[in-house]
Image 1 (tube, chains in turn yellow, brown):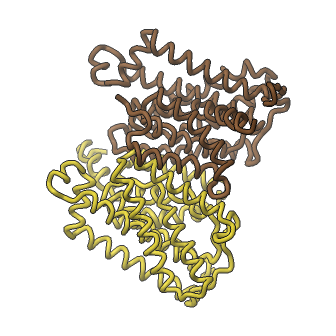
Image 2: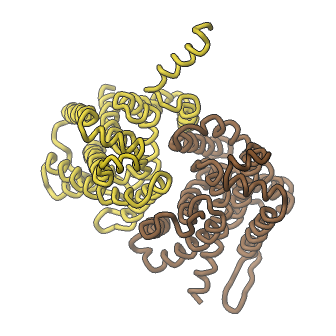
Image 3: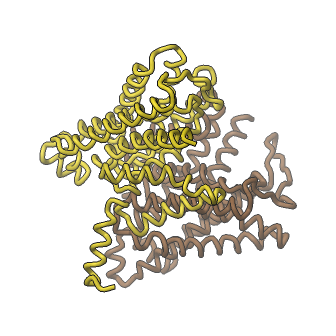
Amino acid sequence: MLIYELSLATVVCINIIQAIGLNLITGYCGQISLGHAAFYGIGAYTTALMAKAGFPGPVNLMAAMLLSGSVGAVVGLTSLRVREDFLAITTMGVGFLFLGIVRQQERFLGGELGISSIPSFGLGKPGFFGLTLILVILTAAFSLYLKKTWMGFAFEAVADDEDTARVLSVNVSAYKLVAFALGTAMAGLAGGLYCYFARFIVPDDFGFITSISVLSMVAVGGIGSVYGVILGTVLLTLMPDFFRFISDYKLFVYGALLFAVMRFAPEGLAGLPALVSAKVARTGGAP
Amino acid sequence: MLYVELLIQGLIYGCMYAMIAVGLTLVYGLLRILHVAHAGLFALGGYLGLLLTNATGSLLLSMPLAAGLVGLLGMVVYRLCYQPILDRPPYVALIASIGLFIAMEELFRLIFGPYGLTYTHAPLQQLFRFSGVTLRAVDLAIVVGSVSLLGSLAWLAKNTRTGIAWRATVDDPQMAGSFGISVLKVRYLNFFIGSALAGIGGIFISLLSNLVEPTMGGVPSYKALAIIVLGGLGNVGGTLIASLVLGVVEAFGTIFIGDYLDRDAIAFGFLILVLMIRPQGLFARS
């Protein structure tokens, strides 16, 4: 039983790293991405190939971050050309492009069948959970710190109003690229961890649905707020488990809840206290 | 002959994409919402068309009936989902829409089962031969159906009072409103027509493969999103051309570079390529 809970906790941690990465791009810098899972996938495939070639775990995770981040910066270049909804669809396209390439590469990437029998990280299940937990704390701390730095302010300016930021001589293009590189590097790290966790990866793990679920975690938690994102991720990752007793309906409930949160609390859970107090204030506190 | 057949296949798919994409681009043009749940309505059209045809035995009767029902549901979707969150940042409506789409897909699976349904007597399966090219009646019906439907829609938009009001609202909602046009009515009309067309698109694809399944909306709708961006978001004419172009690019792409990229990747690779050269889409809105 404990093994099961430990696995669940590890998955939660991996998703948090992924969501914090997306929050950096979408929440801090205001650049919507519907293809985050592609970078998660790049991290996982890099780690898988290197692990099978015999490289040690920490090196592989570093490589995963580096490669994902570099590809992320290249994809970030598109955000200099297209904005908002155009960018959303472009990043969605990047996700499908990644999937299409992986699916057709049977020789190197295993095609539809994926990559199996990936060597273990060598810490055992509790040790590996400890590692992911430490990495979650590091990413969250970095993300919180970033918000207070000059760069964090610049991100906020870009998110608020790109053109005004440019007039104020904020180097908008550079900050966008940095946001993409950092955010996707985190996705790469999460992918590497997932690869060691599952030790078997297939293309579908990194499809559009995954991108959407990560975006949902960020949006449900409260876009831009690190604590909100963590809360949202924990809730949405564990939710299918809460609803195990209605197993056949769990995805239906998931979709309906996603819709309901956006419909009734568009700021996400982090904005809920403010929403409630505003309601109370409007009715004068009367029931 | 291979090239001619590929071209025809591409155009058939293009027509189907057009049926979905027109509704999406109409919604985008008016409300600036990426309406992912449109795909759910597309699938619903397929299901209703198939169920009604199996029950009544007449496709000609079921098609308008199914389209009408899907259109009405589209209006309900607007009222319940989008109207209350119109003033929010665009990602709110996008994620709400995705949630709704997931819920709809699951509902189809729970009600009609995961394996899909087929026609008891698949209509329009006769074969025709034109100097070496073999076509099914379905293929012809799809092309003729979409061209005549979209053509009459264009005519209505140009020549009737409602159509003029509609175009005025898309161009400038505030101005149209101050000239006495009910913007709300135009939005409802928009959702009705767009959803009905998507519903018919769903019936077309169910005829083409003689199958409706819960997940049938997914891939065509993602493609439709790519198409409306290619067509210059909100530009109906551009969307129609982009649908046909994408259909043909896909058909030829799978033959020539199918070893490296699958069908979806070809479509989206093409999209990214075009956007990097023309960030406003192939046909920008004036």
